[in-house]
Length: 196
Image: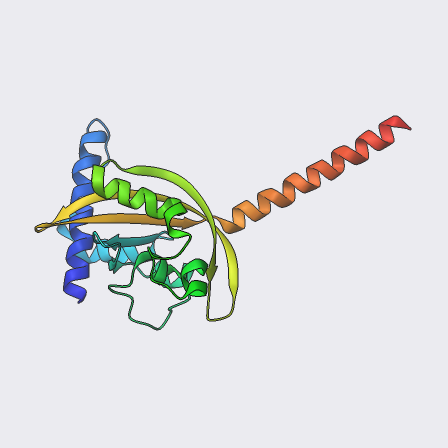
């Protein structure tokens, strides 16, 4: 199991390295350290704050890094491989309807799913998209999470996979909302006192 997951993550890195090498050819950025030291890459993938999921064509989880279980804790102690994306994340629609991810009444409107399918079909990546959705953190605690995600497609051995990178920006969105509300309140108070 670890060998397959590690192999997928390593291949994703190699695809990204080729793309990055082309994009940053004129800079001093060097990724040769990572190529010669796969343990460093493995540590880096698990220390980064982003959730990295590698999905197959059925949107089933084939590999993931440790932040998946920190950001989405619905299945903290369970075996996640081959769960569909929404099942691994604890999507509230999937949990409440007791249906598989991709088969709920809300799946046809899921931007995350639509983008993943589109990337798989076209090979064209998507970057820095947003989605807000409720997720179960455990069997009874449902929370609204605000996520930013990017999706890229790559080949490993003979199969095609999707790399889904998710950042939980819930705290930033909530803080931004509070600041906007406070600014509005201040503006209203200033307008009220300037009228007097």
